[in-house]
Image 1 (tube, one colour):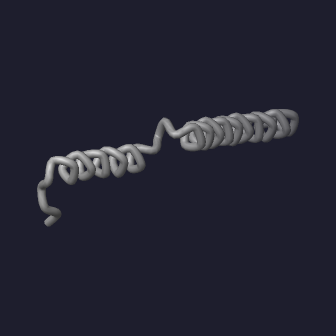
Image 2: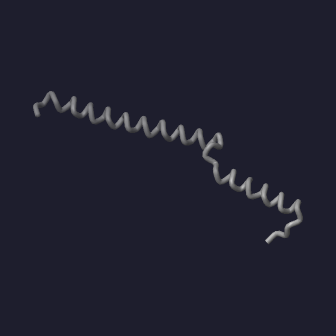
Image 3: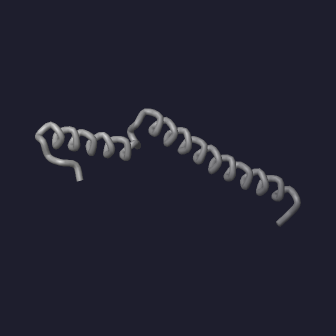
Length: 65
């Protein structure tokens, strides 16, 4: 490996790391926006469905237990 190849190798490694960092940054923002808009909020939907079932049972006169 001669001396002029070293800066190009270092530049390639830095470029590779920058592409990985940019990909992670983009993935973070996509997940963050999905959570903010509720598309990944399955727990909230589950709780709402459970409450809806409980209200229906209460309306029909079933005891809680």
